[in-house]
Length: 570
Image 1 (cartoon, rainbow, N blue to C red):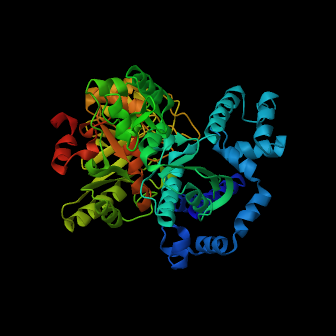
Image 2: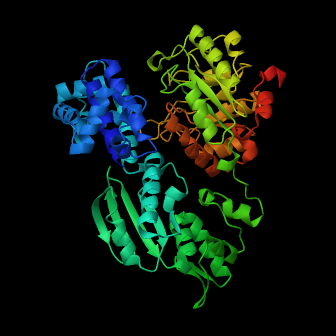
Image 3: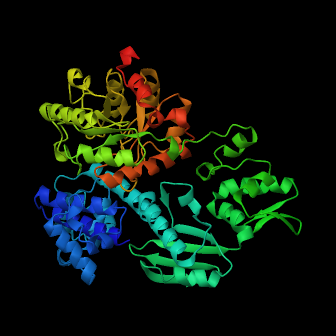
């Protein structure tokens, strides 16, 4: 949780510097540090105490000193300086799609816009539209972006909530000795955003467990503390709720509080027809309790197999279970590799050798290095010579590996006219080609993607809708046409596992599966810790009813070699 606090501070510093017109390299240094620290799996305080801050990619002497100051004093001079100059309320508005730093700075200077209420005022009274370079269309886009921004503020990203929940659960295990403990609610169902964090555990001494919960490291405020329920705010402002239940009710409580509401209503209706009653306390026939210790008790009581949490949305899973059609969902044990990783050749932090070492340690048999192509100058995009040099290094790394292979790839830009950023001659030398739209979001995106998929060397379309969950809806794209084009050309669509993308979404994954389209999880990792983002992509895949055969990540190297051959030779 200290990681999150420092990451947010560095992110705000970057935003403030950008608004003030600082040089891009200074802004990007803080953004990179923020991203790296947010995704660390270790507690940064432990790293600091062990003298390893400078071992973190992107953390130089200056950044390390700022981290040390915060961890030792609770404050950071640089952060306090920028907050005095640019208020946090104003910086927060940079999360609104269509409202860039220059526009926001002009609105502050000319219209005294300092917070969300001020922005709403200048939109409604027409003064924002009157600023130089604005106009009705731009203001309408900002209005739509503000609506999305307000909606996202009410929810917590899965990528933020899950690490907090895992940390709290681990600390509870150590301090209380509880054996059965689990996250619940929409977090357990792996929804892309959650309202708050629900945790459930079994125990006979609820009051003692709740007391220890409210005094865990990272708790900044106790909202409620009772004999069976507790609620706290942790660093970063996230709410965590804990409920302690009797051991013989743990399964029924876990099922009940996992939801969804629509799924649970269907189960209760089925139970009623069998003369049963289902509640958080168990399964009852009259006054007799006939189940509840395990989740399986609830489903077997109504004649169903256990339905995985990710499917519990009343999207047809109950009918599928009744008819024996539940999918055998892809699992982490099925994952053999990652199709989208950036190295230090573009805007990543790490060497190819270290990425290979990390991926192999995760149990993978391959990882695809897909750095940016030359048009993506903002991300250190590679030219032809750099790409060829990278391919040579990959060959060298592979020569020293056994049972693991680094795939030479590229994330190639799809240009405004549908052409790709490299020639077929170059693309034909690569193992994996991921083609992505990074600009011109309103410029014939559907046609550009369809044209890219016809290229014999394009294997995967990256982040197909271009959405960012917290700030933009994505491209103007006809996704059904894209899916049908993918099916016709044998092109896979990416599940970009970065938690603010999760693109494709769960429902779109299910649609793609129905149309016979293959999917490929890519973490879009920019440093080693982000390779762990695969679990977010896997959550999307499971919510999308995907099975092992639907994901290229489950293929062996021999199967991949056939699948990734130029389309004309497949």
